[in-house]
Image (cartoon, rainbow, N blue to C red; front, side, top):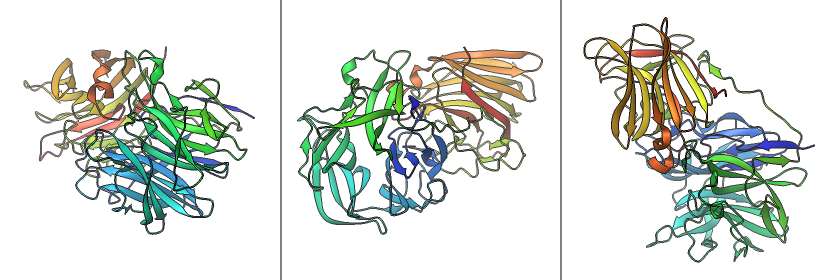
Length: 517
């Protein structure tokens, strides 16, 4: 039987996908940067349909994300399974405490993961695990070459996953496929047909991104460069091609012996802008003359990928979160920590209560913001808000976020004359501009945003006035191509107020889905 995977198989900001199989089950980890819980985990039975099962970093005290920049935090995990246990290595960039490469482990990827075991002897970033057929384990990583601009090398040492200890010589395996190779990173090592096959990401994460490969008969090398490199890229298709930045692949083999790759790529729209970030796609892989061939006969990512597995869809995610559960669902994220002082789901049952913290989205802090990924180019989102500002500076509503310097807020706030308004504010490159304002009466109302391409239109609904548009924002500045960094857009409830205040805002429900046409 064959199932059709519709790309992207994980829409929205799920970059740097790492995949492994255990029996009939497939598990995938991806980067999360400054968002918490960190390192989202997904489960599939057919590589086409994926369901969220949790996060590897999901409790306060595992690691410290306070103060990390918008695209700092958790980079490029590698997920593997050996001897009945799951192991994940990752890099933490920034933060006030420990940083660098670390290992976490779990018996069940949907269960509790261990506290990080820090790897101070593992330099650089993008660590990866390889378990050989004889039971030996190795840690790979990427480090910058001194005195260069983006020139790197991939290194490897023996590794004890029980203790995190590295052993044996420090071996350099590869320095990129081309003489002028830059950012050869994200290494993954496999065993196939007597070869050790090293897969890399090269060229940076934007237009020049690519997948390259090298191989050796011995695990320690030397590794020969594939003469056909890169084996997958879209950089030769031109700037007008709508799918760009293809790279950072990981391979997985089915029980029937078929191979597939998870790959990141960005959908461009409204010009060369990728508001949804880097998304997870699926490609078919075959082996020819000892080398992997991606989507043979096509050589690039396609909208649909046939998978030689029986279809196993999961129940569709609910479009509306009524906030009836005692914890936030797996699709919600906070910024830079657990934020226990920022929200409650129990103080007013059936509501998400946000406290009016003084921290704002413009800071590298943990504001009262619960965000979910934008996953569709055209979407509609709405929330029911019960909030009355008690004084100047108190506001609550809805936010669409790229970074501290690039976001949009639609908030209920007090006017200087004592009235109440809904205000639309665009923060672009650190400068705030009011894009619209409507007077409202005290009492519950609904706030919404709908996107048609790069036009984000914000609205307010209150009886008896019905729905009124507050304003439309050109969303191109919400893309990483303008704002910088590596993340896609998040949106959700947001509140803030002056220090020392005790106010709060209550959200009865939040709805998100693709826009109707």
